[in-house]
Image (cartoon, rainbow, N blue to C red; front, top):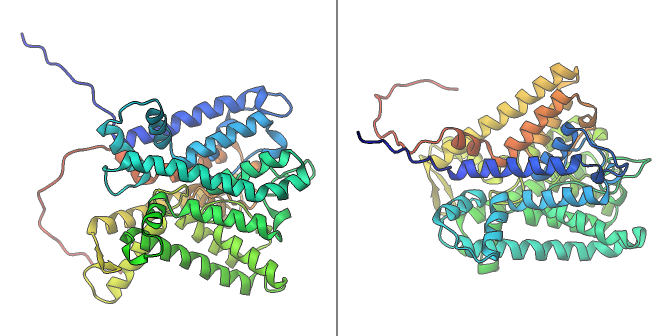
Length: 445
């Protein structure tokens, strides 16, 4: 009698990415629960450690405990390590260790790496990984060195740690800060709102981390020859510029019109940059108008570029959706960017991602509003911040129940790994449906 041999099913690239993030979050949660991680030397409840670890790995910045006053130096180091792993990506870190140990990178590992950093092709992945690591550590070091004199002037030797922490947190678009005191918790960068060195450095780190590694590779190779860039890099840079300039003008005219010129510019520009998707703030967000908070919500949902340290739907998704609207208005069959046509599959993916983000963003807010009895507007702001992995808050997150905080944990995780990644990981099929059913007509709009 012949035996039927069942070969074990291999994990897909998407499943490896999901499991990698989950593993790091659980390990981080365990470390943060230990007494050595808190300043008071006490065990931290699992749900609080899990929330903090998820926020760090998903580079969000929402917290239930003030990072500076609650966590010890060891706890802050664990959080910073989780931020760095989350910013670069679990797969990038794993491949980096394999390269350092001299191991050969398999085709499966290269394919997983391609999915993790949204690369165009598998070829050159190992070289690209080296570029990502070198660029990341160099930029973070430069950012820390620029801010170090300012922090050391106030905090002495501790300023070195603070400069490094905020540089990594900003580049990874995490939004964690260690500036809180017992008298003023969760301050973010409000005490440095008028400091051009700190605010400008943080903004540049956020933008550099948020436009993506592939875009920076294009810039490094082709320098100022914009027409030689890949279409995606061009779209990312133009969209990023648009999403910075327009909100800056709005905030300058509508929110901070009564401030001195320099402070007005710094605060307006910072509030335009940080929602995509860093989570630092230099003003009291609760004091901003409802119109300004709505702008922030939109920016949080859009996020940064694919293959970057930022979260959100991504600037390319936003650009494709706007391009599709313009193509329909002009009765064109295709979306065109910089003399190139966008394929139909990309448009479908963009529409699916938008639908998923709206469902998660609104659905999560509805649940929290019902559970907590809070206004819907406040809940929408928190869920947009969570699913966009931003970290901006109107101050309700620490007071939420465990169940509501669990909703934010889920949103942060889905926002970081990407909704489509989760769907592809859950419903993995190699079968393409080649047959087509008869076409039927349906009226929309």
